[in-house]
Length: 205
Image (cartoon, rainbow, N blue to C red; front, side):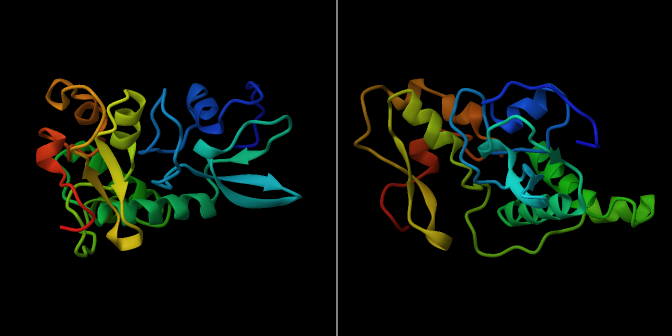
C-alpha cells in the first residue's frame, strides 16, 4: 500500500477494504452480495508472509491485524497483466468498455518502460486468440446470481479448456424470461439475450 498505514476492519475481505480506500486492484468476477470466486485473477496483490512477499488474490483474503499489502509491486502488476491477457483471448466483447479496461491492465505492465506513443500502441494491440467461446470469460457471476435467486437455471459445465456455462431446462421455479439479473451482472455483455438463447444444455456442443 505504498508504505502507508490504513485502518480497516479485521475479518473483512481485502478487496472490499482496498476499494473503500481507493487502492483496489481491478476485479472482474467480484460483485457485492455474492461470494468471491477468484476466477479472473485480476486482483493479485503482494502480501508479506513470514518475511517474504508473495502473491495473493485480494478477493479471497481476509484482513487480519498487522497485514502488510502492496498493490503495485512488479510481481503483482505482471500477474494482473497475464490474467488480463488470458481473459482477452475470449474477445471480442459486446461491452467494449470492459475490453478496453482489460487492455489498459495489460498496458500497466509497461508503464515507465515505454514512451507515451508506445503505450498507446500496446494498449490497443491485438491479443492472440484461440478457439474459445467468444465473449464469455467464465467469471461465474451469472451462475452465482442465478443460484442466489433460487432459479438455478445456469450451471458451470466441464473442466479445463472444455469449461463453459450451460443452461438447465430443469431449473427451479420462476420464469427465466422475467429475470434479467444475469444480463445486468455480465461484465462483458455476453448475455445480451435470454440465457436459454445464449447458452445451451448439455456438456458439449
